[in-house]
Amino acid sequence: MLAKLTPIAFAIGVLVSLPAHADDVSDLRAQIQLLNDRLAHIETAQKEAQATPTATGATPVTIAQAPGWNLIQGIDTSVSLYGKIDVTVGSRSNADTKGNRQTGMLVSWMSGNRFGIHGYHIIDKDSGTKVIGTLESEFESPTGNMDTPGVLFNRDAWIGIESERIGKLTFGRQNTLARDFIQTWGDAFGTSKVDTSEAGWCNNSNIQQLIFYGGGADGTRNDGSIVWKKEMGPWVVGATYAFGYVENGNGPGNSPGQFGNGSTTGIALAYNGGAFNLDGTYTHMVVSNLAHNIFAFGGNYQFGPLIQWKAGVAYASVDQAAVGGRTDNVFSTSLVFTPAGKMRYVLGYHNIKVKNAGYGATGNTLGVTADTSAVTSAANGKRQTFYTAAFYKFDAQTDIYAVADQVQISDGYKLASTHGHNNMNELGVGLRWSF
Image 1 (cartoon, rainbow, N blue to C red):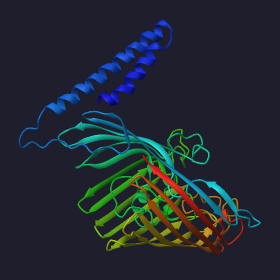
Image 2 (image 1 turned 90 degrees about the horizontal axis):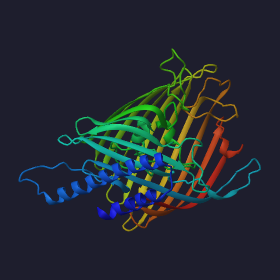
Image 3 (image 1 turned 60 degrees about the horizontal axis):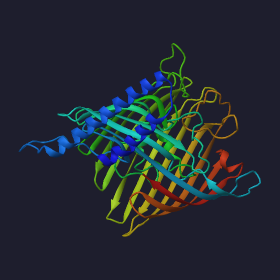
Image 4 (image 1 turned 180 degrees about the horizontal axis):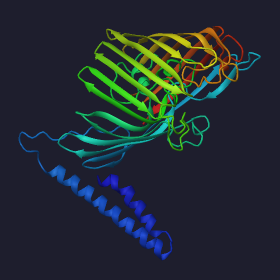
């Protein structure tokens, strides 16, 4: 404990030595005294906890250790810093209308680069009920730029309550409910089971497609959202509502008197059966007073220690004011090979068929959650993605990877990244570290 407090004590000494006006010094000393009192309290409580034996038969509250590096670790409060850095060097074909290839350091393919702060504070020791919160920001490793310019905590900015009885109830900017469930089969890189935590997808490549069928009116994260998840034995249930209006937000928003416009509503159910896992979601969103509905269902099965098969389907119906309704039929499947040792290999395939899908202002097929109020033309089409990857894991936090994928579009499907061509392939290698 003393080792943890030493850097803080040093910082206090530096602050005291800084020149300041009399009033500033007085205020600063008061703040330092409060901090000293708090540090002393934490140290005393730590010593007492170590010196006091647990009474016979007692069941002390178990506090799960938060991931990352502890900034504060008290008797009932923990705050941790964590992050992930992923760098990809890659090459893409058909990178312009002439069909030229582009090679360089790209926005990371496997994971979004991030740093965040997560914490909890126990408010009822008997039940283990705690207040929880996360602030998480994303940046781009090639440049250091913010992933969303002008938005500091673009990944997460939420607070909530968690207990065994209540489950997990969170409020603020966070993942959509559906994306945290269907990641078990939406690509080859997700977890096998669903729990109450937020889950990850691959990042910025042709592979990242099914995540959008877990999205909402804001995209794959919602501003101003309420998310509830609860584990009940092998079952996990979830429900969500995201407000259409968020003050000072950049989301879909609504106008006074239009409460539902820009909102997202969803439910989800998962079964964690060990080797066999299933989940399903339903999402309803209103974008520019037009309804978007998405159903998704899938899962995975483990064939012994070596092979896991993932598969699922999604169906979407989207209102388009001027051209009628749009429907999407989606299929995804992948295989994960994990031989003994540190290697892991994956093969995957996505198939997205759209009927009467509207074009945006640039002439490309709109995404399933996009605003369709201005659509004036539409077409049927298909998008297919084939991909493979290999990973070498140095330890639990660090790996290197090689990835190859190809996207093919046909009929009336138009994709901005292919620059007028009907296909595009990508090759890349990367290094990733989580802390």
